[in-house]
Length: 384
Image 1 (spheres, rainbow, N blue to C red):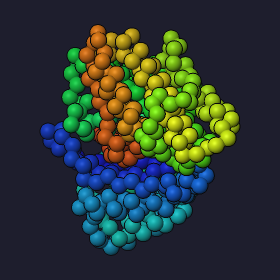
Image 2 (cartoon, rainbow, N blue to C red; image 1 turned 90 degrees about the horizontal axis):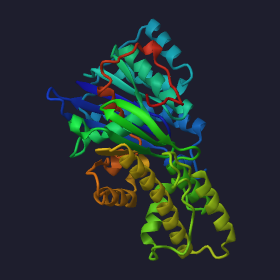
Image 3 (cartoon, rainbow, N blue to C red; image 1 turned 180 degrees about the horizontal axis):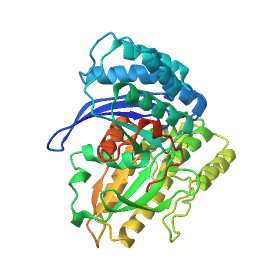
Image 4 (cartoon, rainbow, N blue to C red; image 1 turned 90 degrees about the vertical axis):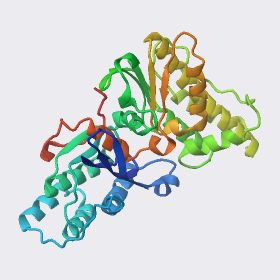
């Protein structure tokens, strides 16, 4: 089975092609991501309208690259009937630039050997999601390929299927599992009593951890995206612990929820008091911001691990690309005295948004196909 996956939940345009063999092993045929960082960097964050525009520009070229790398791109000139053109233009009436590029693509290339389309339909930025959803609908209609919708949060977990350790190899003895998804838009803890059975037990009440990184970096005039920049500066700090002290919001509450808005505010107030903002200060501040976020994530997660007698801990999301976070999580899990917990963390290149994770999650929804006419984006889609 070959799966074509599409990801446009935020500012990365991703298309991947995954081959699932008869023994249920995965072979990655292509995983193309077109980043919009340069577009949004000068604003210090993602502007949905601009991101939507870039997705319109990028999707058709990225599709071509993905099919070409997978060796599935075959030239065949085709005349499209007026009826089909009318339907395609109707599907993509909100994305006229994309419609023009995709119709041109259809005229030039034959239908590839694809068995299923998987597309992220939420959660995320609504204008961005709709571009990917409508793109998928147009392809499903024109090439007559079945389609499944994919929850972006679940995809961040399912991408762990592709590592040396694969969560699909978990047995009943490895449950319950605890999943922590931590990214620019999401910080959630959910309990998984079996593969695919979820229960949200905690989430952020305001800013997500990745959002906090970005906002703190903006306060310090470090650039965008904030996470990688703060992580790099923190590595250069030669004082640990630093003389700067920031709060760890909600770290000792009895629930499993998070809050990072107060940390951002503390950084703002602390920065206003500093007169000399040299390189040394920025390194120390970056180190303390990073450690504050890591401390909260680990403390809350390990509380849930102990309270629910968790056997497996699965991480996902862009913030898990942070080397220090991975290192400290591994140490914390290893030092657990009472219970043995298996830790799964995706490689850095699969932690951030990509369509390969959508493809893997789509495979496990292969029996839940929907008519393309019924496919819709849902910016506030929850894990069920």
